[in-house]
Length: 70
Picture 1 (cartoon, rainbow, N blue to C red):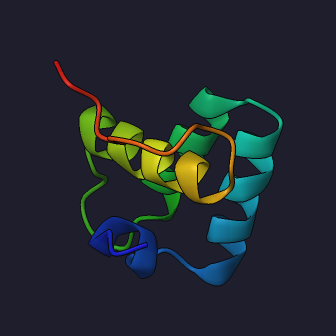
Picture 2 (picture 1 turned 180 degrees about the horizontal axis):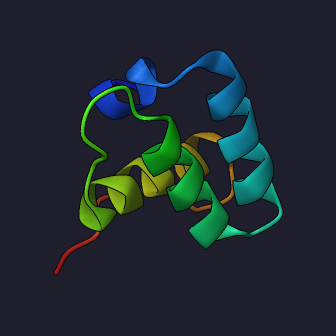
C-alpha cells in the first residue's frame, strides 16, 4: 500500500486496523487510525480511503477502484 497515512502508523496499529476490518468493524478501524496518527488526525474521508485500499489488499473487497467517490 502506498498511502502515507498507512505507513506512518505503528505496526501494532496496522495489525489492529486489519483485525477490525476483517471483523467488519469499520468505525473502530477509523478510530484506531485517527488515534494513532503521529500528527493531526486525518479526516474521515482520508481514513475511509485508507480502509478501502486496505480492504482490497486483504481480499475483503473486489479489485477495482478503491477510492470513495463523493
